[in-house]
Image (cartoon, rainbow, N blue to C red):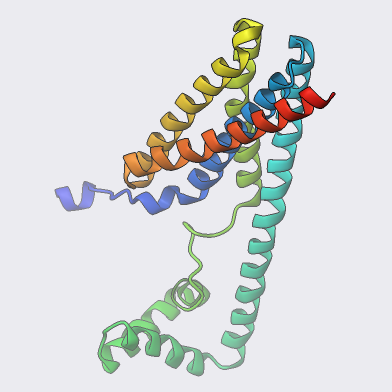
Length: 233
């Protein structure tokens, strides 16, 4: 067997569905939980209330992420199904017109008219709806919406991210909880940004700086609010 037949290319775009949900979930878990803990700790609360706030934030955030991703991706899935149903009806009603439409797409991409017609006819003979879904609607196996996968990935990665700042509440001296949580959160965000950039083929430094900046900003803002309310109370 030749090397060409054995070789299977793996493109980064194939990861985009789960990668988006995983990065978003873990990033949100770290930032929101760490910010909540830092804000409560800045109000000079005892370890117990800080821990309760962190655990509540973890549970609420994980459920919110799962529900939000499921609803959002389900809406995308419903739209895709509606478009495919409409395309299926059009194929049954006038297949010749649909073949001309598909050929026109290939002409616009650079094929000459005769070859475009041949390609359209041959692809439609094998899988008409698949050809139109992919080339007319832009729907493929890689990009198609997967609501349950997105919801579970978001919930699990949010929880994994939230556990890091929660762990620091348990092991760090109470006087150093704010700094310990902030430091671990920023380090985790930097690592997450680097991993996400590497997995997605993006610039690592830019990704690390981006998530680090916004994470630090969120924690600093909640710390100031917590300090202000703590002084008032």
